[in-house]
Image (cartoon, rainbow, N blue to C red; front, side, top):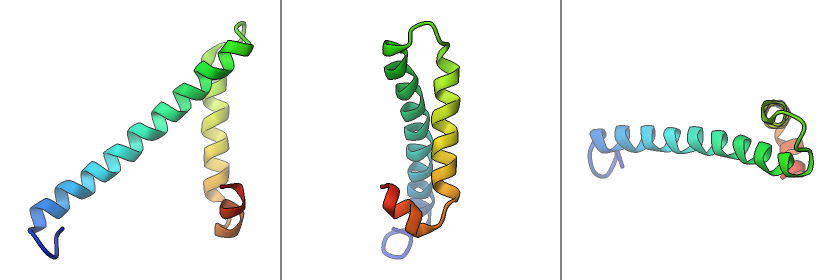
Length: 71
């Protein structure tokens, strides 16, 4: 968009892209907590959120080959 239209459009699209993935990550973690609370209602949701966040973090710090195998 920056190359073909305008630098301002490229800037706005870049921030929209970042915001989209930031919100998507938060929604995925919250959903993991809600789904697992169905089977284990006595455990607090923040534990499942923390486990999901750690799992995503561990997948992202591994090599590209390991990440591809996980996907």
